[in-house]
Image (tube, rainbow over all chains, first blue to last red; front, side):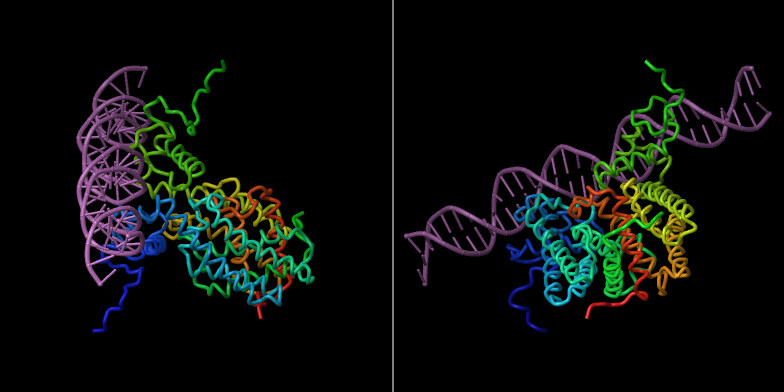
Length: 224
Length: 224
DNA sequence: TGTACATCAGTGAACGCGCGTTCACTGATGTAC
DNA sequence: TGTACATCAGTGAACGCGCGTTCACTGATGTAC
């Protein structure tokens, strides 16, 4: 039998045997994600998270003042990760605005697919109010700024026609967010989207979007 | 003082004074929507709905077997309304595939904006499982089919290049669904989208999307 | 038109449950000297 | 290096609450004759 590692990971799902947990804060965040992913957002309760972490039901209060605080921490955690991913994606395609734009969209969808529970907490109903949590707001603003900038650059390069870049970014965000929601979504999934490769879907969607942005002068109503 | 109408509407928020409510089923559905719209999905409880309708907490069980059944009924109701709207929009632009496509998207977003609580129940987490409720599934399938058909027609008219229309419909649905989610969405709204005119946003987005669909041969990865 | 009666749609009290949160407590840790 | 002690991170019992659901019941309705 292999020896136990000197120090058990904080994420250990089994009840701990030490009086002090070691990293209960991290373990509670992980437990919250597991609960949401497995049984939906309503399954996240402080008591259930404590149970998963193997501590008493009062223990979480040493790390979070309330249930709301735990949820906000989960959202913050996820937002930071997503922003990191997007920043990296943006840097990887610094030389091509088109590729940068697409990489950002694909990354957004990839994140949602890889971290559905995070995504739900970040954007779902009952999500923590972004404006109440400055660090959450900052991470969000950075992600949006990356997208915005890639559009401004594309316009400068003549790949996307003129128009308010904030509105264009909004449209792009909406599409990519919609695809993410459907991929992550509850039971009411659009026919078969779940079976498709998310990166493939993301690449196709962002391509259509980018071409559309390039071909018309800002947006126009075409009905009637 | 004006005389009372002979018969109070079923939707009456005040406690009724008759032993029999009249249309408790309808009143419970309306109460459920009000609760979700006002205080979020978690605020929907059978007891609260009964309270709003002015009946005892046991009364709802004469009309719904369980809380789940009430939620499923709300979703079904909303899905039927949305499908009605989309069918009408589709018929109104029967002669122009491009306008039809756009009208469908705009209608989807208009519905979400007009009936946010319905929209959340229909697509949010914890939504009733579509496949378990045949009438829900049928309404959904019809909505998707309308979109699908408008794309097939657009391809026939040479406005949209070839490609699997189901995938194209999926992309279109995702974008429009994303915009709707953001408009309806919880606290984490994308910067300022709520302040914009939803129909305006919808028209612009669908225009970009349609042009994009027309310009590239199906979808292509443009990164790298 | 009047009446008996089955059926329907409510009532109100009660159940057990899991929740968020508080409290006084105790065991473990780490720092000052 | 050893020890006193403040601080920190847990425990376990308890609180009050609102929930979904059940139950025996009763008032209202409508139909058969």
